[in-house]
Amino acid sequence: MRISVIAPDGKVLCSSRDTSVLSEQKIKTAHTDEFESFRLKWEKSGITCWDFGDLPEFINSPETVKTKWVAYPALVATDDDIKSVSLKLFRRPDRALAVHQQGVAGLFKIHFAKDLKILRKGLKLPKALRAAADFFKGPATIEQRLLDRIISDLFCKNIRSADSFYAHAEEVSPILISRGQDLLDHCLAVLKAYHNLRKEFDTLKRANLDNHAVQNFCKDLIADLVRLVPESFINLYDTDRLIHLIRYIKCMGIRAQRALVDLEKDQAKAMDVKSVSDRLDKIVKTLSPNASNDKREALEEFFWMIEEYKVSIFAQELKTAIPVSEKRLEKKLAQIIRMI
Image (cartoon, rainbow, N blue to C red; front, side, top):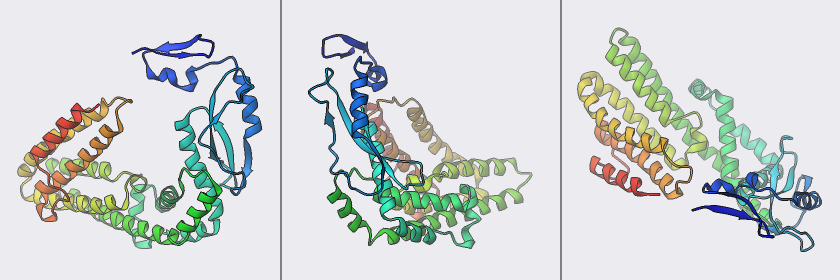
C-alpha cells in the first residue's frame, strides 16, 4: 500500500510504501513559521507547581492560520536537577505522551522533594551486600536505580489537571516510603542469590583449573546468569518477577552441583534447552519494527517459559510456576510465528 501525505491544497508533500513517511521529520510545510509563532506564545518554562490550568490532549490550529495542524502539549522534565519543568508543544502524539509522563514525574519530584530525600536514605544497601553490587556497577548505581524505579512506578502518569495531580499526590504520599522498602527487600534477595552463585562458580572453577569441560560449563552458565539478571534488572522486572528470578538462580546452582556428578547428562538436557532458545533468538533478531505489541508480549512470555522449562528439567524440586513441557513450548512457538 502506498501512503501519501497531502497538503490542504491537494499537493502531495511526500509519498512512500514505508509508514515512516508519516513521521514529522518527513513532512515539510510552507507554514512552519505559523506553528512556531503559536508555540512561542503557548509554551512556558520554570514551572514548579501545577498553576497553569488543565492540559488538553491536543490543540487544533487557530482558524486564522492558512495551514491546519494539531499540536500535543506536554510537560517536559528539565536538566536542572528537577528544580522546574517546562511546558512544550509537540507534533507527534506518541512523543508527547512519553515526554509528558516524564514531565509529570519531574513535577512530582519537586512536590515530594523532602519525602524523596528520606526515601533515598532508606534505599542504602547493607554492608554485607555492597560487594554483590559490584556486579551491577556498584552500590551507588543500584541505589539510584531503586529510586528511579519507584519514581517511574508512582509518578510517571498521563495526568492533565491540577485536581488529578494533587489527588494522586495524596494517594501516593502514604505508600511512597513503604514501596521503596518493599522494592529494596526484593532486590536484596536477588543480589544475595546472585552473589552466592557467582562465588560458587568461582570456587568450582578454581577447583577444576585443568578441566576444560567444567571451565566451559561455568562460563556458559555465568553467561546465562548475566542474561537473566542484567545490570538494569531493577528497571526491567516488577516485584513478582524478582521473586521468580531467585528461583531461577537457585536452579542454576542445583544444576551446577548435579553437573559435577554427570556432566554428560547435563549437556544432553542443555541441548534441548538450546534448541528452543536459539529459535527464540532468531525470531527476536529478525523481529520487524512494526511487529504488534501482542507478538512482543508473546515473545517475552516465551522467554520466561524457557526459564520455567529449565527448572523442570534441572531442578524439579523447585517446582514451576506454570505448566511447561517441550510440547507446550512448541505450541507457543508456533502461535508466535503466526502472529503479525
